[in-house]
Image (cartoon, rainbow, N blue to C red; front, side):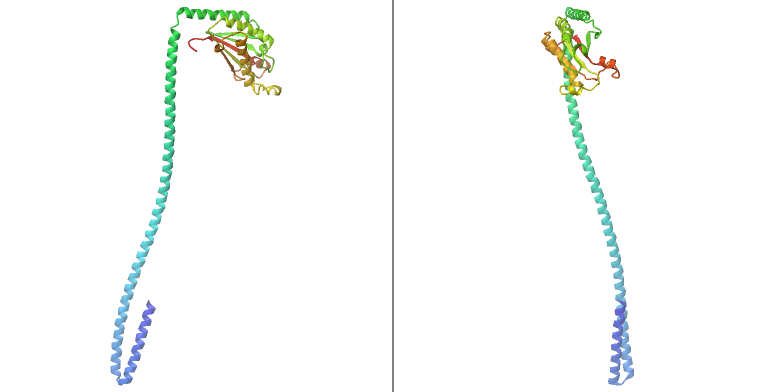
Length: 303
């Protein structure tokens, strides 16, 4: 802008000088030419002053524009910061939405669990009510019936104790329950689930006594030691679970078919090697663990 002003002044000054010379040559009056030049110079000075004022105004406008530009840049920066903050808040809201959805799912699951528990409690209350009714029925038995059942139980215990004298068979009494325990070799060959001929003779004696004692629940449980089944027997008994269950089932089947016991009073179970009565670290202990238990108890109430 400054260079433009100087150029304009130079052009105007040159024009004035040239005009002065022309004027002087035409009229030959130096004084008039000088006065004319002064007037022209005065006009030029006024124009220069006007240009300076315009220049100052332009400078002020430039300053204002620069300030406005700075404000605009600051505003843009602030907008960018706000947009970043909005993004962060949006991400936080998104996470909150996901958390809220997860909590809704958990609440739904909790309600389902609560409903399941409510139903289970309702069923339990029903079972308790039925058991109370059953207990009332059992308590309603006459004293004579109870004494008769107890007499039958005592006779059963005495007869079994008389029949079972072998040291490899034991009888254990607990309240009104009897448990006859046979070591496995009394009833079965090693690793097999078929009752031996000697075992059938022993079970025949037990079955005869049980047949004369109605109203008893008979549960047969097979047990083994912790030695894995031999390879040659695994085609039939993959593990001790199958062997213990098969032996218990064989005894129950004998009682039903050969002794004529009511199958509704019979129950078979296999426990593998998970209920030892001795240590499996010794042969003597393992021999005690390989056993069959016949558990006899009064069958009270409705079945």
